[in-house]
Image (cartoon, one colour):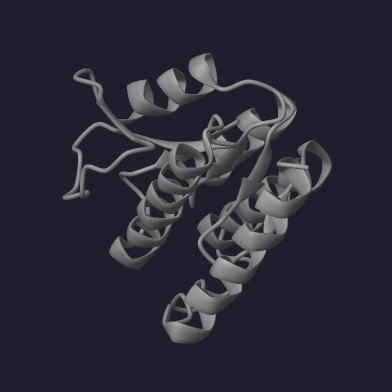
Length: 162
């Protein structure tokens, strides 16, 4: 199984968690003489600093951020896991049969990703027409959200690697 990570959009702490989990899995597999149950593939237009480690793949695309999304959708397979903050990308991946996590540990499926995107787009439309107040500033992202993500990642890995 592959964990597809949208490296352009993820916080450094999440990139570190994903990389360290993949490295630990690769080391554990090597020590026990088995194949790793999963690996992490970071895909980005502009690759942020990510430590190279066993079980970690880095792929940069040269033709823009949308090309990184397209490449991830092209390479991902049903049963894989994806991590992204990009709702349209989450929707595309979920439609393909992937489980998708955002940076706050929310799990997206094809049904709830469509619904979430529809609500977001409708709210933006109402704001542009002056029929709704401006969107409040995004809530802060910190230790609480990082823990929620790590817990959700553990749950998804446990269920997908059985």
